[in-house]
Length: 156
Image (cartoon, rainbow, N blue to C red; front, side, top):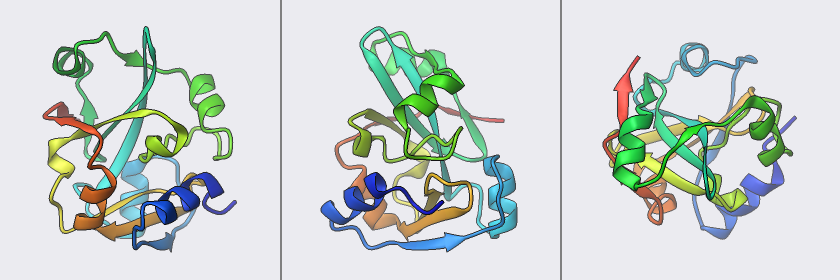
């Protein structure tokens, strides 16, 4: 499976320069970073959350987890991890289990951890467990300009 059209069209609509980087099939972000020779601090991972008012996507470095208590405090809503079924339902044109960093393409609010802002380069899963999207940090910052941000990641 290639990058879903939802993501491709969203990146095009936002006028973002990017490249697709193939890698051996891997599901965990730590394994993806390893097989792709990408720094974990520059590999963004998405964590789908749900609240009383809908779904959200938290985006953190692959070397970290999202602190749900801090997220809830920062953004004034109770946030919990979404189930695998919820992830599959929201990202139905992606491989099962793929949560997408550009949740905006699916109409979701995105919470971006501050550690990913102003990086020289950013990589993230393209939705198929075999492809990364690579772009400059400036393009990523522009892509995420409308997202909420704050310090909410914690090392694993």
